[in-house]
Length: 76
Image 1 (cartoon, helix red, strand yellow):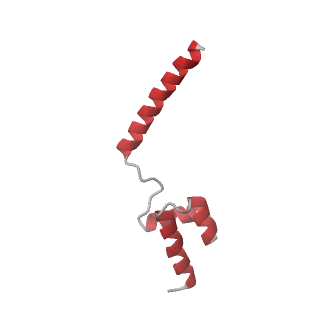
Image 2: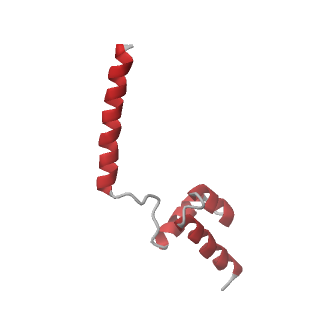
Image 3: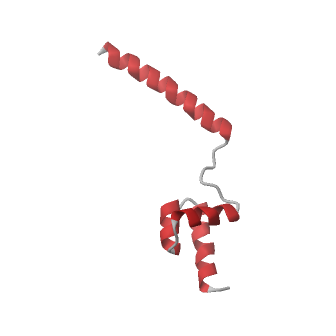
């Protein structure tokens, strides 16, 4: 295995373990961020591990908190 491939495997493993960000992974491989994102996709890795339903719930929770905050801010 060539040195570049070994480095790619190592960086992908670090990304998978949440040890490096997309930008840091791209930097380590000396490639543009978009190329790193393509590499992630080619290896079955995603930028987000939340499901669509979890994201929707996060959005609902955020709006509830925002509404509560706005009410409290008006009361002050």
